Image 1 (tube, rainbow, N blue to C red):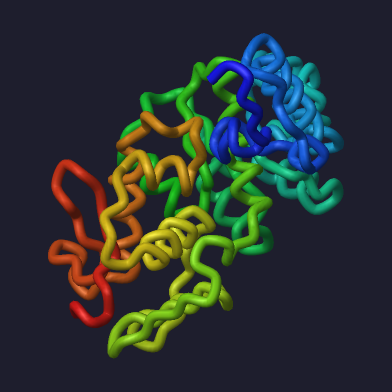
Image 2: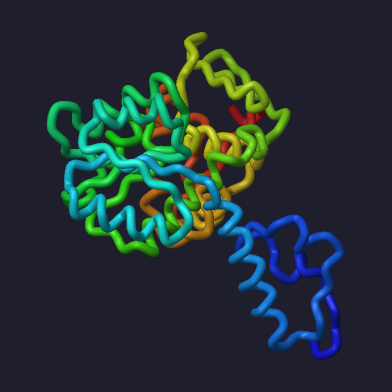
Length: 286
């Protein structure tokens, strides 16, 4: 390998970190050595600054000590932080300041996190991460999905993990909704999916999917007939930060089946390959 030069994009691949364009325009690495990790570190840092610069985060939580801790962590990373101690105040700040993301506590007085999340989803697709002081149970994650949350984290959560999850959620939100599966459509006598138009209907009735549910369905359709492993789905839909969170795939697949399958217990479209992953059954196989 010594003495060989390769393009930076080819060396790094697509999954280490999204790189600013100026690092990918004809850049060539020196022979492998100390320059390589330096370039990777420099490129990633430059991109993370680009991702956080000017981003406003609305923190809705009635625990002052937690809010203070989160504010310190996020401001150090370059975010602007807005604070609200209850859902009603959070909605007012959402209207007036138009933040880029909401960190939303579940248990609050007057209007809890579930109600607040529902209200936000009525008017906006802003990324929402729900936070709870209770142990993260599958039922709560599913309820968060029903409300339209993008992520569900249990307190206490470390600063590094919180920031990593926030960046992953915002990165997904900024991707074109039809990127995975552009131009793909599917229709039979029960289910109709138009990826380009971002429309899903069941028995003629339009069905609302969360951004992650839609991206998951689009990826499966794009690879119809081919099995995608749990880790492939995690990496492509959630991001590399989630590569070991296998339960996410199972929970989201279950939830997606509730919305699009005639009988979720006997799936017709999204098929499980035990111990491996899932695939979307081709129309010719139905």
